[in-house]
Amino acid sequence: MEINKKLFRKAQENISNRELLDIAKKSSSKFTGIVSNNGNIKDIRRTRKFIVPSSLYGMRYKESSSTIWDLREQGMDLFITDKYGILKNDINTQDSLSKIKKAKEKSQKVIYFFGGSTMMSQGSRLPYFSIASLVEKLLNIKSGDSYACINFGIGGTCCQEAINLLINRSLKMAKPDLVIFYDGWNCSTYLTLRSQLLIIAEKYNLDLPFAIGETIRQLEHNITLDKVFNYSYCLSRLLKMSIGEMAGLLSIKESKLEVYLGRIQERFFSLRTHKEVEKLTQLITEEEIIMRSIVEGVSDYISIHQYAKAITNSLNIKFMTFLQPLTFWGSKKLSRNEIKWNKSGYSSGNTMIYKSFKEELLSTIMNKNIVEDFIDLTSVFNDYEDELYIDTGHINRLGNLIISERISSEILKRI
Image 1 (cartoon, one colour):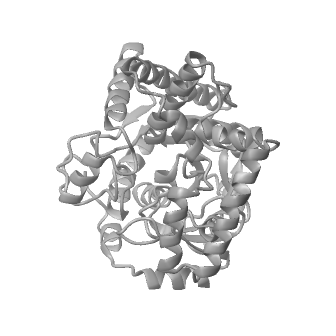
Image 2: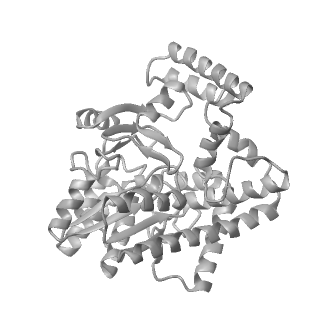
């Protein structure tokens, strides 16, 4: 697969964290600070200034905001939203609705992208190198026409939240020509875990605030809502917040001490609801439950994508699904770091779940002959020896470019 030379050179350019910070502060959006995801209450509040909890979508982004995530050794990432809380493809591009209206006035194609943090493009450093942004650039170059690619990706979500977003928000904004779901990683995690939790809830007679159709993000919100009148829970949370406030007073904003104290609090006095979910997952030990959850998770995955296709096709909108690459999927020659992350399951967890999920998914898709709109990208890196991953699933700028080359080519075959 040939890679655009100009974009390849730009993807290789060095971007320092200082340059990224300067760009963030100069943008027209409100800069909310650097997020380290360390558990410190100051860091949690900075996160909440950009990402807002949502019972329906799991999370959503604040309008006209920018943030820097400092989560990996490879460097920080800058994200910017427009006045509708949708990710921008570049620092100073117009808001999404104006972009869509302009495209429609000129009879140009509009494409909606959905996915988790990989579509959000953690590892891209700048919005310019997000998958949606690069696909837009490549489509314009390859076709000679102009396309408008809108990035509805939201970190920490899967296809369940994507279809909710598609139905309840995206299609109400405007009707696109094509809808793309780029996923698989979070779906393997959340859909199987949902099944496991529902199984053990029945087995152990657990009163979980969890229902079919919800995923882990909704469960986390439900746990908090369910215990809002529980005195011991509220007092415990108040104590943890008080400890967090005192720790915050001892540390300078965005300092190494803040990160260190945050990690201590995360371990002993965590304020995150996912700690409650982690306690529940310790009950999931039987292989029979895990294997059953994989089959059910794959069934849910296929159903959700079939529903999305039926909805979009009924509106004369094309639909495509791309199964994303992971270090566990495909036959890429992994770098030393990639081997290390692959073995440890860094940012993923149980590697067996992912391998079994893909095997079951591809087997089911072939048996049911539902391959027309499903493109498997898990082997897209097989011919590359470059280090493309920054953990087991997030990829760097060059990785995004390789993915975008393939996606743009597939789009042009169908649109």
